[in-house]
Structures are given as C-alpha cells and as structure tokens.
Image 1: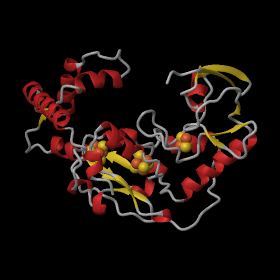
Image 2: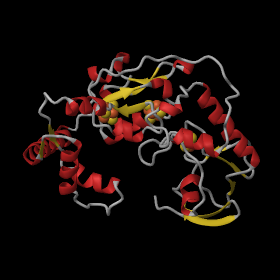
Image 3: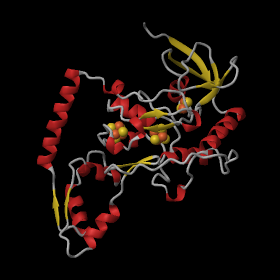
Image 4: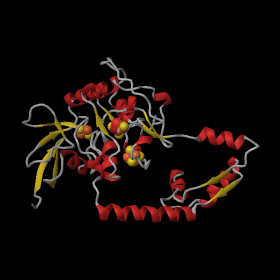
Length: 302
Ligand code: SF4
Ligand code: SF4
Ligand code: FES
C-alpha cells in the first residue's frame, strides 16, 4: 500500500512526514531530540525501556514514540514536566538493579545509561531494593558478559539475530529473574557464538565488552627474554587514523608500524595473505547461508 503524507505538531512545530514513520522518526526529522535506550533502527524496535515516552493530545497516559506511528493531526509533546519526571523514574528503576561501579567500568564516559542519568539529573537511586547477582561469563577468548550491568534492552539479541543471523543469545526466565543469556544459560564459549562482537557494538552499557589483554602484552614486551612479534589486521590501518581524528579512510600503516616499534615490539608483520583467506572463507559462508537459507534464528529460540 502506498504511503500517505500526514501533518502533525511536535512541540509546537508543524511536521509533514509519511504515515509509515513513528513519532520518534518524525521528531528526528524535525531535529527534536527524544531520548531512547532500547531502540536501534531496523535491529531492535520493541518498545521496552519507555525512555522515549511522549504525550499525545487526547490520549491517556504516555505513548511510546519509538513504536507508535504518526497520525494526521496528532499533537505531540516531548518534554513536559510529567514526561521528564516519568523518564527520571524509568532511569531510577533501571539503576536500582544495576551494578553501579561507573568509576572502574570499561564504558564509563561512553555509556548511554550514564549519559541519560547525568542529563536527567538522577543523582540518587530512590528505589533501592533487592538486586539479582549474576555470575560473570568470561570463559570465551574475546567477550566478557556481566549481566549485573544489563538493562534488558535486548539490543544485543536483535543484533545477533538480525545482523548476524546467529541467535546465540535471547531473553530467558520471567519477571525479576529475566536476563539475557544463551541456550541452557551456558557460557558464550559453549554455544554457537562466532565472537563477531556485533552484540558489544549494540550494547548501551558495560554489560558486554571485549576482553582487554593490554596488561599481558606489556608484560611480554617488558620481558627481555621474550622476542615480541605483532601482526596487525588490515582494517586497523585505517581505523587507527579515524581514531586519531584523521579523514575517514586515511591509511596510517607507516605511522602504526613506527608506533609499534617505539612501544617495544621486535618485529611488526602485516596480515595480507591471512586476510585474503578470511575473505574467501567469509564469502563461502555467505554463499552457503543464502543457498541453504537455513534459519539459524529459529533453531535457537529459547
Ligand atoms: S559475538 Fe556471539 S552473541 Fe554476540 S552477536 Fe556475535 S554471534 Fe551473537
Ligand atoms: S547485554 Fe547490553 S544490549 Fe544486551 S540486553 Fe543487556 S544492556 Fe541491552
Ligand atoms: S526507546 Fe522507545 S521504548 Fe525504548
């Protein structure tokens, strides 16, 4: 069916958009910011966290803007005192069951929950109560899961199912016991996880993060009995440039090699041949996936 154009008002601004958009998307088009936590366009549109609530004239209560479609003549308000108060309560409740060790958390300064708590001036948690203590899963070689910092937004679940089409993780249990885990609550190391890291990219908090072996590397470099060799992945050559504020796509191979030598590595190797093999293997998996079209997601629904 063809989309129609609708007119609505958001915070007093007239907005004209297609009727297949949500209020959140319409607001973004009009440069009006509505906070979100669980929403990830095309990956996780489940309306779980309630951070994006707004008020719509003629409707009772709050409306979840990330899933509510726009309608002709809607009058939307995004930041009334009632909305701000309700968002504070949402944050307060999330924080009440959250391991709040921000000072030493790997995501401190880059955590969406922390950013919202600061923005909404949530300085004290009013709803202190029982907390669930999850065991930390650090068995895998590259990913650590600390569900004590999970806010149950399910963005990781969406990323694993919808981007990777693996479905290694999902929500398990009910109510207060709910958490994101694997089949049989096993370690990521013992299920069909490919350690691609898409779930980490999607996670707004420190619940999922890559393992950091920096200290082990320093120990090896500083051990004069050990001859240290570093082999870099191809993508790093441009990613590093971006990290240092250079134009996207800038190749910093020379600078990177010099820096690695100055850090103390004895030899620096590139990975061109290995990378070519990886690309061939990935292409083969891609073709197989789409020729067999096996639905990995459904195989692992918990
Ligand atoms: S790292 Fe594992 S759990 Fe995370 S998205 Fe990839 S396959 Fe899924
Ligand atoms: S692990 Fe992260 S992305 Fe997944 S549900 Fe918890 S907070 Fe959200
Ligand atoms: S962002 Fe809309 S409910 Fe979470």
